[in-house]
Image (cartoon, rainbow, N blue to C red; front, side, top):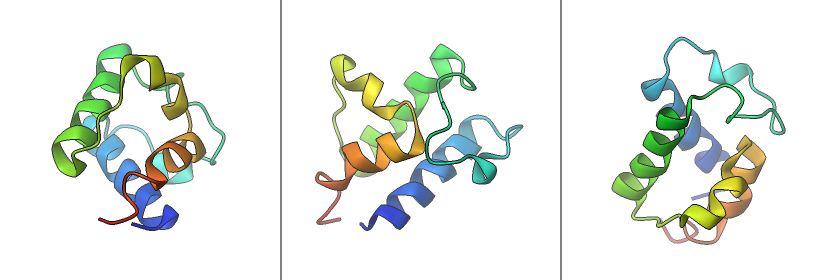
Length: 81
């Protein structure tokens, strides 16, 4: 997956979990965790694991706090998908 595809995939997951937010208007550095409740954030992590077989240890959750952070973190594990 390209960074663009990763961003689209994350936005798709975010929209499914919390459809009341316009995730497409989020900038790359806007805080996801400031908008998501804790359980919703965990749902995002679980959905990444389910859809893309990506394991995100709890110690790495901070890397997923923005769209840019998600793309940076997921780029290598999703490169061949």
